[in-house]
Image (spheres, rainbow, N blue to C red):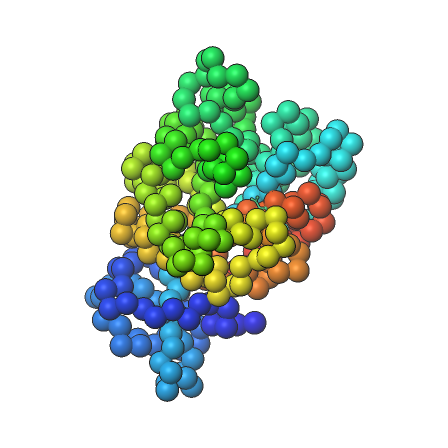
Amino acid sequence: MSIVSCVATVAVPAAAPRFAGLRRVAGPAALNCDVEQPSAVSLQVSGRASSKASRRCVATMAGTGRFVVGGNWKCNGNTASIQKLVQDLNAGEITADVEVICAPPMVYLPRVQSTLDRKYALSAQNCWVGEGGAYTGEVAAEMLVDNNIPWVILGHSERRALIGESDEFIGQKCAYAISKGLSVMACIGETLEERERGDTLNVCRRQLQAIVNAISPADWEKVVIAYEPVWAIGTGKVATPAEAQETHAGIRAYMAEAVSASVASAVRIQYGGSVNAGNCEELARCEDIDGFLVGGASLDGGAFVTICNSARFNN
Ligand code: PEP
């Protein structure tokens, strides 16, 4: 499948956000499509040369970061199943250029740390918003750092929905975790109801704005954005490559407006939501998909390795 066929057919507004540091022009024919072109290379617009009549274009912005795949094991597993998963992951060959991060349940982190091959980095699935203390059941960012856990997942929709974490709280958590030296996979994404009323990008912008408000532009180096439409998480209902690409491009456009063109270009945006060994290739081909955050399929070592290696299809 070509890149052109996987990207969204979105109309490019006249006031398209300006970009620098873009990776490439997507597809064989880069057309201007009546878009006012900024002086520096900016929003790249590609389309099929043969479809002049409809003048349909695709907006691609394309991040410049290394493909990054996270495995969110959530609250799953026991000693035996986690030992098997680690064995399968260790036996798997990561042949693509990809950064891989596994997030076991907190209680199994030390065991996984001592047995999992170093080709995989480790992440926690949550940490507290500030310094440790009288916060029963929580884990402090300092404790993760003290245990050489470099990553944390924050803002997962399950924590937003089930625990009631607000946008602002998640922004503060990101800021605190980063201030202690952690890197963050920061999750955002709309519910089905929000998508159906056309609010997908408004929700993503609102959730990101809370993080933008809490951290400095330089801090974005430590953040991977995980776009996870809530309706696709654990449902087997995956966003089409076109849907995912369109939202990822919109998120990158927002980052250019809200932070800077260079951060928008560098920040990696993962797609999450029912990614599996069968659908990862066509998603990985999309210009603005820079990786995946994987739930269910990350519990199967072989499938997860296949998903990681789909990085080779990313251009
Ligand atoms: C997730 O919860 O981060 C996730 C993407 O789950 P799944 O892959 O199972 O949809």
